[in-house]
Image (cartoon, one colour):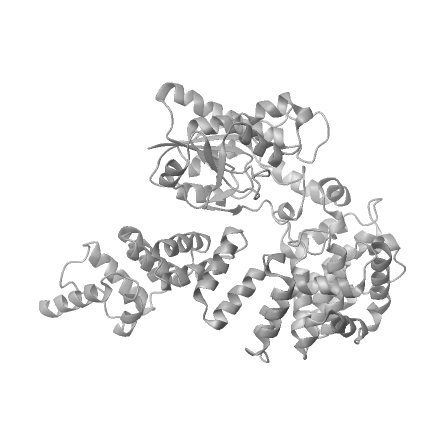
Length: 621
């Protein structure tokens, strides 16, 4: 089967995603086409939201930035030194080295390099997705190179369109060819109505990808009809009668040049004394210093950094969400959970109109405080919780600022304290359960009350509530319910690698080996250095008949942890099954046979294979 992989866009500072693509295409008859710009990139223009910023900044840096600064124009206007720093990093890359980087990973790749400033590839008017024309141009150009090859050598059986910074864990040509047609392709993501779809990946027949790639012409010729890349791409495919399905073997994006908290602090200091410096910059600098102190386990220094002298204008109070978040972390370290909870509440309210992912860490801080409340029935009653946080003891130096911020919010937003606390409880419920469940005083008796809370709020209010179902299922032995909840998390893209491991393990225990194999394979690719995960992957490979692959994972597990008995037994089993150990050979089967019953549950004829080999060793003697 002839496969064409079209990679278009801009290389980033990391090659990790390209390595994942190479691994995903190993063994395929693949032609690689790269149509990329002749300099590396980072997200320093175009739309700028939390999902893009987390690829530029390390977590301790980004969590100290006010959410009111987010957005491309506002962000870089407030932090010009950071943009200059990233731009210099990108400009330092030699175009020849870009080709070298690609050829090091894909020696036979066809590479089309262009300078990004030679062509005018902008919309006539300013738009949020102003880089979309450039992206579509490179998609089209890579596809045109593919079409030129096809005129000489015939059509490719399967065509993949992807980005240089997208992790691809598997190119399943059987799945693609059996699912796709000239009227159906795989893509990375879409909403329920299929009116808003992702633009990072596509897979299908050559003709379907030709039609997918032709959006570039429409973007140039019909700018007045342009709405947004994700909307217009959905309409373009719909108008072409192309249906879409989500491709299951994709990961996240590789990080760009990461700005550390220490680097951000230095770049902020370069602005001090300039016309760009403001009260908000001063507060942000103090917030950053405090966060660095917390990372160094120096909560007292963090507290001192966060003492604000002088007056703060009402307009600046609206940008204290990051300040209150770090203050909440500081008080948590100092075991002042009432103050921590109130600061977290203020941070949440200041961020409430934003995506929940932005304030997830803040919700966690609030949940930490709630989980330490002695009487958990308080959590089920917004009025009692309001009284607990608003009338409890608070550090003197923050009293006035907390009060002003709360009053400002009530005045500006018309917020009712009880209503907003009730809303915050609903957002934090799953976090509260997790933190509370692992405190020493928590017991199974705690869970029913919090489950009532979650059911009252509604599990569907927030994807994190699925984790409640996982926790409750684990506590009650509801394996099927736990599998269903974990599968929903995977399908929704919110499952961590450890939750994928757990799903695979539960599927294995349920005898659903093919499904377990799929989930474990993806999880191991994300966390390849985990010995136990490789062992379980080996077991599942043997369970579904993938013996060569099973041997590879068995050896990986053994090399990572050679002292684990089950790893040694698995290696022995694999080598015997593949005929690489002769009968009677003194292969390392000296692992305690107590490990046999566990592994034998999942691996076909495991005990028999080992037993026959041990007997052959005995006979040989």
